[in-house]
Length: 356
Image (cartoon, rainbow, N blue to C red; front, side, top):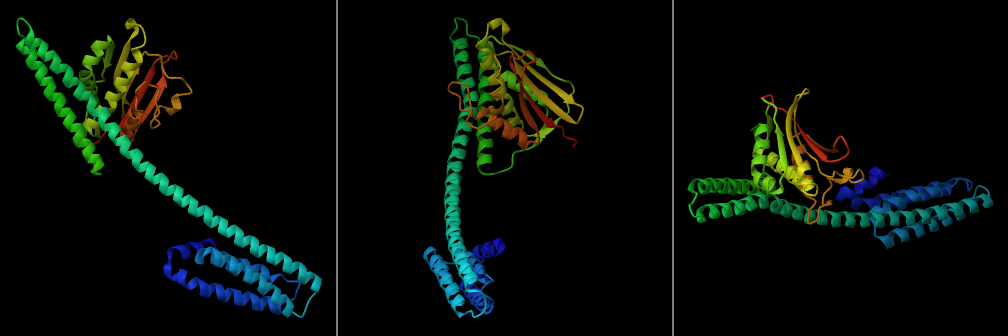
């Protein structure tokens, strides 16, 4: 019955032919019901054409058909000459109630399916708007880092040149950093445009040691400003991974920024962030960033990768969600845990090493 209903929905020809099939079924049931004894409740089988009509006919037509089937059941009982009239009356009542209840339930089911379809369409529309918001949040979040670095470096270059004795070399180094940050911003915009156009990300052999070094270098100003001791422990040599270096650096940069925020609330002499890489024995490579901050509450730990979930004032709740998406698109895994003594947070990125 379910397969037949599905066929009526998918096949327009079957849907047009359904009234003919329903009429034939009703005629066959009427004949058999009339020819059998009153004790045999053949009329119950009228529920079959009623169920089929729920897919093929309008609501009013379905109820009219159900009432017609009840009427045919009565006519069939009057035409049947054999059997007990007492049993026939009971079967008539049972069949009539079954037909009407079936029609009512079928119509309610269709109404529920229609409501579900509308709700799903609304959810799809909301999802599209949400995805657009996440994309805008991603652009703002990622481009803001190099733009902030450009502004800070430009201010430093201005101070070097405005000194009583202009420091030309220092100013030149600042301009070189500005150019590097501008290129990075351009690469981020190019990558996001590629994602919005559904183009595949550029994949190449990437050394996670280089990703770690560049991430720390880009955050050098924030590190010095916050007075954080950053310990970098890199495993040499480290097997390469296959991926998009810009995306992986985006992930590492977001995690490092979170770590710097986490240690900002503790005493300056305890502000420590460790960046570590290691080759694992199962042909995988790990990048781990841990901090000595206050840590994450056990109740919050399962939610830190949820979209739009954040405990940070002014946070978007998108950074770690985007990071998880990028890592998983590289065939890897990202996980968070608390420090050994219950304080601090440790984020591990594990990626498969490339064999080619």
